[in-house]
Image: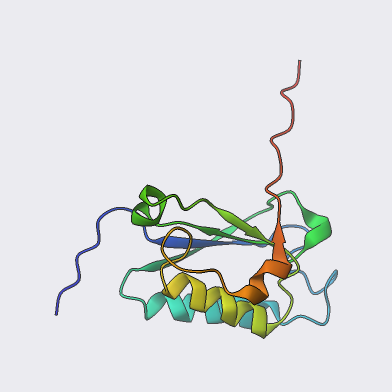
Length: 129
């Protein structure tokens, strides 16, 4: 069976900046295993999920930070990016994987356990004058 995708997949952006993903700041978290699990899920999703890493998402005090972005289809159904903080254990990563594989924002119900990880998106800083 051939699956044709139109538009962007559900994308999980993984912060790997100064604090997120750092054994120096979060020594009890297996950062490599988290990223490996997310990439493994994306690889098996037939293009429905993508994983990207970002240098710094700007909310270091809530490390590890992930952003689950809706697919094109999810966005047309009202889905918006969901910011998650304190993603420090494999259980949280498994919940993110399940959410993304189910369609993500706009298409799937967010697991109740991720409610505890929701954080507000940071505001863009005021432009320098």
